[in-house]
Image (tube, rainbow, N blue to C red):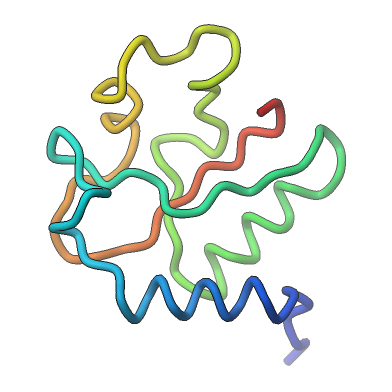
Length: 102
């Protein structure tokens, strides 16, 4: 099996989020789990591959789509609208957004 090439600081952060995060904390808005991780990058710089690797290796989840575009192109008029694009609160799961235009 090929070993993941995710950087050690990123792995450490993910492990901390998985170990100490709770769905009943401030990341739960309007009944939905806000993203705890943003994949930063630019178009055509492997953000899709990196995001896929995170979801497959660590069980992280996107919202309804990989790219929510809430902070560009006028995508979300409110925090509740942004939160509604992610899974419901409940059993804790780390969520992420990987829109390359932020």
